[in-house]
Length: 171
Ligand SMILES: [Zn+2]
Image 1 (cartoon, rainbow, N blue to C red):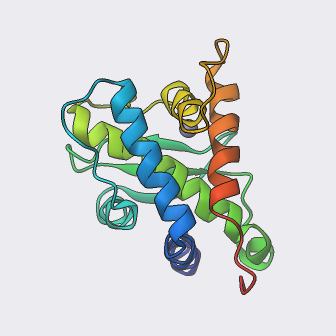
Image 2 (image 1 turned 60 degrees about the vertical axis):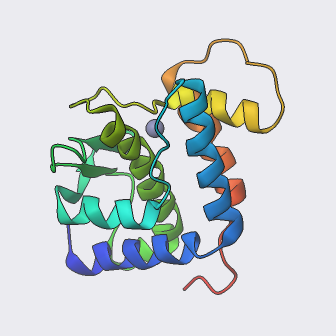
């Protein structure tokens, strides 16, 4: 992935997380997910720090078909974020820098779960279905009917986007 694209995503992630609505939502989301999992330990809610750790481990790669995905795990020091090939870099990148930064945050949230679970590979502690249930809980909603992973992913991504709105000064 081009270095300037990585830096653009990094500055995008920093900008979004500097907003207290966005950071506060993620903090609550992670803690609610931990409650759902009956976890005795609290998740690391320093998403920017965790994102930077991912960058220093497996880093960002680009070009997977379909949805973006997390890979590896923080504990194993091989955490990685694979961004969808739907994101275009270069000239068009400015237009989807916001979406790419949101996607990077989404995958980092999955990886934070894997760090705590001591699990490897695709056994993420905070899966899409758990995170969707966490959003329901935060909004005072009853548990919704079973969702597919894709439905769950779309659902909590929407809530993340609502909390982490595109800043007016986005370049
Ligand atoms: Zn997901």
